[in-house]
Length: 165
Image (tube, rainbow, N blue to C red; front, side, top):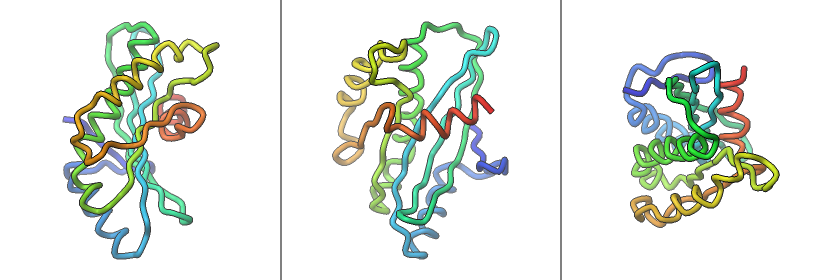
């Protein structure tokens, strides 16, 4: 089971679905308009790959907060495969939570840590990642917004800080 924590390190003891439901209720009662951005980044460390997935809650005009989940795998992967694995992990998290976001009328974005500049290695995965996301079933009630670098702060900044402290 995937373990989630707050940015301050506090481990979430209940399911992430229940945690998010409670957070959305609290934020709605406080009158905050929310947007959620989900992203994953990875870092190769020796013969391991550490993945960090983040769920970033942005309060319009009032800052934000995030939840983090890390996982380390022993597999060796080419850059393109690793980028697609990052996108897959973000989508998996989005699917787990999408019905809550729909119920609370929260806009959702998937942020891919893939560079739009063809001079970077990660760009080799951009077309496949976009096709993957755009080909997903419409389970998310009309879909979600997909963003890549430089507009993908959840993956390229927030998750990056977790795997590259």
